[in-house]
Length: 182
Image (cartoon, rainbow, N blue to C red; front, side):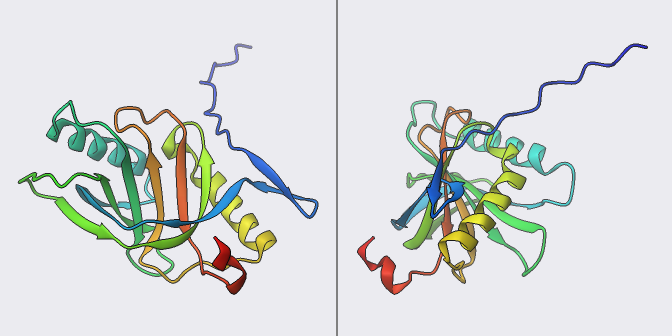
């Protein structure tokens, strides 16, 4: 019997830490400073099979619309369309005030948010289930609560031209009195 070969699954790497005997994904409590982001906005439905392809095609669309000399960080900002929905609005953008006169391109001001910051390595679209598990475990063990914000999470990359590098995820959480030192 011949066994068909399947591609090697993506490996998502992330640092971990020990909190009172429980292992959680390493995190830092920090403020995400307010920034202005220009980029392409679109919607995805995580329940549909094509959402990864849709995100990649829109990121390529932004890269084709900017000058190749533009370098620096980029942001993928997810906001929930409806409570308890699998549909998300996505803004894939850069912190430059550039003008792109095409449909779906926007400039927004992201407000300052208190966040749990996580670091991951690998394909940005392969971490979905792992992030959900990591984030739920983080909330339970750290006794933190999610912030009631229109922004669900923000992915940041140091280099707009390299999405396979390490990236950070900022998840808005409520600032507790004990967190005032951060």
